[in-house]
Structures are given as C-alpha cells and as structure tokens.
Length: 146
Image 1: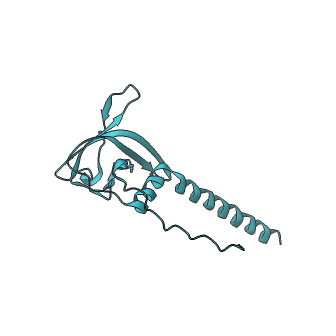
Image 2 (image 1 turned 30 degrees about the vertical axis):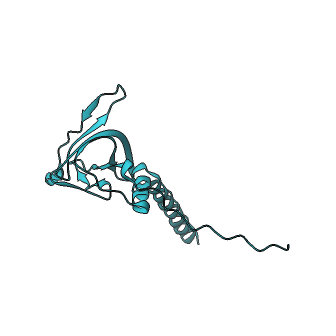
Image 3 (image 1 turned 60 degrees about the vertical axis):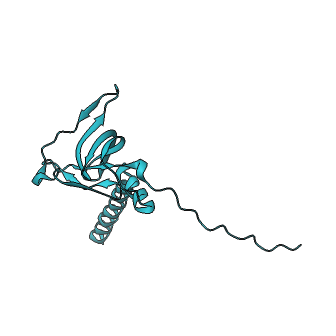
C-alpha cells in the first residue's frame, strides 16, 4: 500500500512540474510575439536598415528579447545589432551551426531561426510590420420589453 501511495505522489509531482514548465514556455517573450504575428500576420519586410526590431535569444524554455537594428538586402537578413543602454549598437557575432546565419529568409515578419554552436536560437522580429487588429462584427442589441 505504501508503494502505491509513493508511486502516486511521484506521478502527481511530475505532472505538476510538467504543467508549470508548460506555462513557463507559453509566457516567454518570443512565444508572445510569435502568437501575435501568427494571429495578425505581417506585411513584407523590404530592403533597408531597421532600428525598430526585436532580437530574440532562446535556449530551452528561456527566452530573452532585446531591442535592436537589422539590415535587410535582397530580402535576406544580413546583419543584426543589439541596442545597448548607452544608445549605441553592438553587432551580434556568434559561432553559427551549419551556416544557419546565411541566406536568412524573413517570413511573416520573423526571420528564419539561426542556431549557434551553443544551441541558442536567434530570431529577428519586425514588430512594426504586424498588421492592424482585424475588426470584429458588432453584435446586435438584445430585445427589450418596451
């Protein structure tokens, strides 16, 4: 009987831990932005230098989001810079796996994921390219006793 209770307690603990970990994954900054892009879509990112992007750095369930600058040429992401608190920009220089930083496409306002040798996942988000919220049909009034 004690073994059955012990097994049930272990299973319950693991289930609770899994649910808490799932909530953490849902709440990180990358997932929030990705959901917004998925919901609304984004306009095409034209060639140029953008000083209003967000650079995301994910590893496991953790994500960090930084303001930054990105250069786009021929529809591809060329360079990425993180905005420093003194107002200057620092180029993001990493050691990339399998040249994942080459030919980086931008689809629906989000760059293709670039992967570092330390398994960091890096994306650039063009948040100003998110399409406006879609209007919803207005509900009709309910009948009254008048």
